[in-house]
Image 1 (tube, helix red, strand yellow):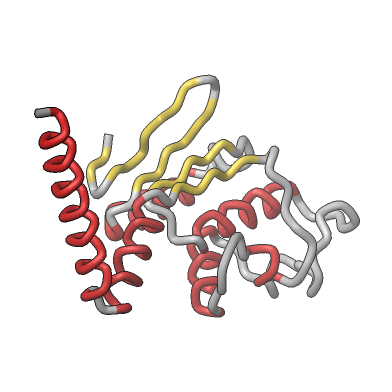
Image 2 (cartoon, rainbow, N blue to C red):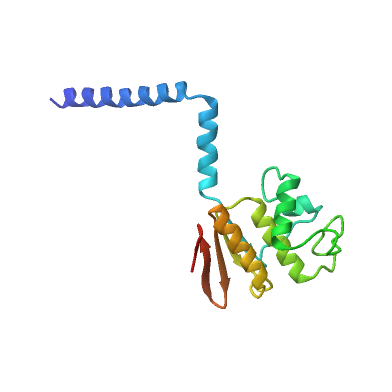
Amino acid sequence: DTAQEQKADRRVRNQRVEHHRDRRRNDRPDDRRRRRQRRREARRVAIVSETIPLPRGGIRDVLKSRGRVTRRQVRDALRLVGIGAEEDGLPSVIDPQRHKIDPEVLSRLRLARGLVSAPHAIVIDEPWLTGDLILKQRLDDWASNSGRAVIWMGSGASERRSVQGQHE
């Protein structure tokens, strides 16, 4: 009796394995690519903190966290955080250890770095940015329009600013 049950169990397991093999075989490469992309995007959270150092390099190298970064992504992120490479006197190669760059500008560069990765949620723990009400409003608008979440950390308590268009 147990030999028959074991045989039936093996048959069921083999059918499941064959079903999954057939499903993978019949999948088009575009479908697999889209599924992987959705999985990657579903868990994308950016953390902006003064404890995370900026790398050395050109503006695109500094803002790139992973993967390829387009000029448009860089331009949009810099515009959103309120800085421009020309007007803030940033050197062509940014080396946070060597150059005397304003701490507020470094904080904004960290924020732009977080935004370039197109996160679903961004956690901001930067004391230089918490007092900037215009920046907060701009990020709230960005979050509302794009369905993203912005979470401000400050004075020991977190303050959720906007989540998918809802303001608290």
